[in-house]
Amino acid sequence: MPHELPGRAPVPAPAGEFRLGPVPTAAGEFRLGPVLLPADLALLTGWMNDPEVDAFWELAGPPEVTERHVRAQQDGDGRSLPCLGLLDGEPMSYWEVYRADLDPLAAHYPARPYDTGVHLLLGPAASRGRGLGAVLLAALAELILRGNPRCERVVAEPDVRNRRSVRAFERAGFRAAAELDLPGKRAALMVRDRADGPAAQAQLPA
Image (cartoon, rainbow, N blue to C red; front, side, top):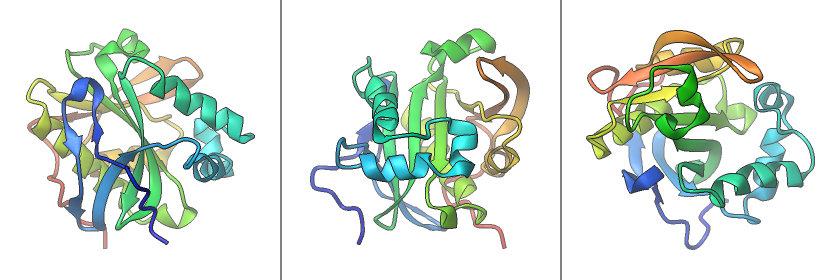
């Protein structure tokens, strides 16, 4: 059954810089909605306990582990927003959209004002390995840049060992700008500049 919870409105990005409603992509209609607790907790906990996800997110465990991670953002200052991604009404991804220039990440690279960061988790195993990550990343990056003229770049910092994630960012128009030694991981700094990359209608690979 599609995950159409009452009251799941489009999410304002950090500082209210853009809003993402339904967006057509080559994979289907994509939209973000705010994570709702406790309604979404069981779903997210199941994803976090998938060994393939836990290898990089390190949030496996009882629901309280996932809840603490999400509530820390919801109860914060709005610089990072946890979101559920729905494709044709079905929940299939977890996102965090954050102000990278105001994040501890900014101490590790030459941040610019209004740099916006993204974290992506494709939840169901069936959603992985199909090129969906690249399609949705391209769509979100395009909307962030289109919706906030002050933001020149969308950035991400996947673990360098997560080659699937790095390739998805590359196919979505991000470039590998550097490798960063962050707490707990060596990361690939991926950057999507305003003038580069595909539009939201990125195509799934053949």
